[in-house]
Length: 279
Image (cartoon, rainbow, N blue to C red):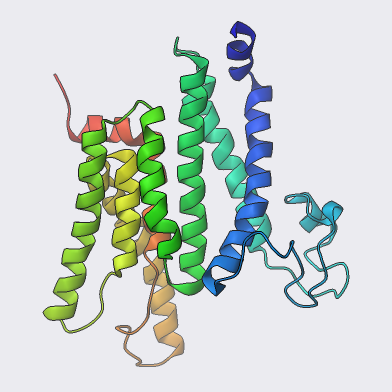
């Protein structure tokens, strides 16, 4: 057991986590592509979306195969979306960073607790990646992921030993109700759609892991990042469309919420320490 604890603190362990993340990222691409269409994520095996040719194992190596194939299908030559290597690389980077922060440091905790924390937070971050990219593609956050994800992650977070179950339970309720109130205000008062209830379910899932104290930080970071990225895009859209109103331009908020949650995951304690100083 001491040998395992020592290994977890080595760069080799972080590299193994990155490889694991990249492999899972390849699977997450399947989820991102198929779940919105209501297709099975198990069958059929990975195939070209154009010619339907099965993807050979040596053409399915995360990131590397995309580079070797120059982003094209080996059989029909159609261009493969850059989203595939981006998701794989992003998931690999998140796995390495989560392992380094929550597992690699030997602070006297049991190996099982350190590995359990990695499993919980990597699953959480991976779910955010999947939902963020689905929202970018479809402007929808599927209930088939957010609802069971909230329950599973709430229960799994007991293994992290970081946030009490009471704070996380309040986080589930507060996350959903916060967005529900905004959505109802837009619908009944302004007579138009505002935030979707999918965002509320996503925020509830975040509260199930991070607790209610994280939610203001998550929303604030999401709003700042969302404004910084969306405003230039909206202005460019308006300039190309003439005097067309921007009221009907939809910008998914889920990806920005995911960024806010990841920022809190890695720097939440420091942020709260600045906002709510103790002593």
